[in-house]
Length: 394
Image 1 (cartoon, rainbow, N blue to C red):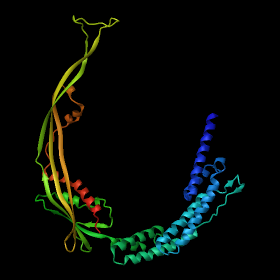
Image 2: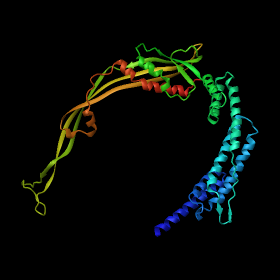
Image 3: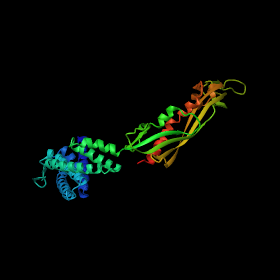
């Protein structure tokens, strides 16, 4: 019985808390949050005494939210452009969604006032359809005007308008064809190539990797890079990935000698008195103690090492004049490293941090110069991607 009482007390406190939150949101003009909190509470029990406070809050919030939105709609219709009509469309959808939250709960009886709460329930479906048709035509006409200005950025704006139009009114007139046209007109085509000035042979695969712009995940989806010229396209810029210097270290094998020493427990021994006899405790038992010994080992660590560094720049050029319009340094490093070891002596003396190294085996061979250069591929790709995102081409 006590647990049931505590449960109802907790429910009562929770209900008071949510009604207070709803009331606060009503007072600051956040009507939809107030509606959300109150409808959620009432859906769990609209006849419960603890939820009675939510009904007048919901009544006021619903009326004020609708009045606010209808006033906005009235003002927005005067602007008569697609941006305004989009807001009108969204507001009518909000009005209908708000109605849909209230309807399943009706009627809502306010016991203290001995009346049902009043809600002006109206279906805005006709307004949504009418507004969608008006908005669709506005988007269509504005998009076509932008599409045919000959300006790349205008074509991109047209693309956004046509895409939104197709989202709310799929198949409207020839909008699918216009989307394709806008995408083509809004795309900037860039010719990309690699310039090897290192004096060394660069792996073909490395060149392919750093020209694989599709794998970069660039932020600007309007840029299309071609590594082979398509004479049906009009290029505005060239991106040259210039590789200026490659540094490759010789194969290195270094070694290091490490001495290990540790005091460890090695069984036990009797405790003897000065005469060499085994000592006894008060109960007559033999006294024993841990036998501590010093163990030693010698570790020889070997390091196989080879490094490569490639340096260059991303050079932006005007496609027609071939003049540089910006150059940004890029570099990447790669390291082949294999560490292994051998030991002699007592293994118990060896620190645990060396155990894994002692399990390693020597590499059969070092990577070739071409292979170590390839190891820089990922780092170089990331540096090029950073340049292209931080210094966007338009």
